[in-house]
Length: 364
Ligand code: SF4
Image (tube, rainbow, N blue to C red; front, side, top):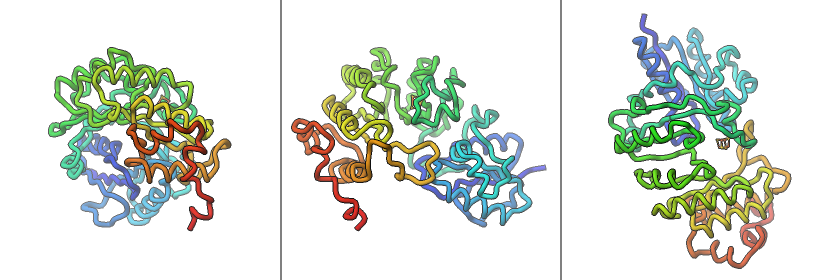
């Protein structure tokens, strides 16, 4: 008997299509089932579903997930409803309060669908606009940074693929790697050989580990058709020598600093001066600094967490500076305001003075 499968992406913002649902579609189509993807809550559905899968993303986007669960449970009481994704994996007890049967909360990765080509027929707009295949050539990570959810969900490095050819949609011209730590995989060389052979554009979406960038890596990367940025991270001050060396190596292979973007974590165990020192380093090295505010892994509201060494005025100052002197939220290494300041100032408060306004003015 043919089953009807309804795939639901709750109504939150996401730049990328719901990869897990696209893989589930491929998985079910192998059994001859019909699949349909919808966004948010709608009763404009072609067939009464036998199974409903609802995905989830960041923990702070839990409300639209609850809305979806409530809506589909009410409208299709005879369907089997499953909830999965990041929020459900990180906070199953909270997710269960949505009304979903707790035994139908799926945590982690559905391994049976992991190696299937996602069903991109469900996202025609994505195919037209981006024309890129999202690929995990590996899962997990060799590190266990305390601010990261990867060790909790995907654990240590695993599932290293020897080929990704079967995961590239025929019409796509680009591969978007979602690997958490691409270079830590034993098979990264083979994967890049394939990417070059297929003549694909490349986006290392989750960034590359600066500690693993060698001359060989920099050379291999310089041969690729990189989609705008090579992304690194400078999460704490002890990473300084590694990030400096990585940027130097990439530049020595002809990659412009303006195409090297460095995520800069703040509001974790750092203090504002430590954060400012890292911004200064990145701009002095000629790369782009992208401040990234720390959010706890189980934050139910975004931008609410204030770590012990930060306060609301300084956190707001970073946001304002990103809006006023940043470019799409990033600080560029040009001879503009920030660079001049770096030459003159030593502390966060000196450099960000004009952006530090009393809280009551922020609220107005
Ligand atoms: S290296 Fe990156 S992916 Fe790995 S644990 Fe640290 S932050 Fe997470």
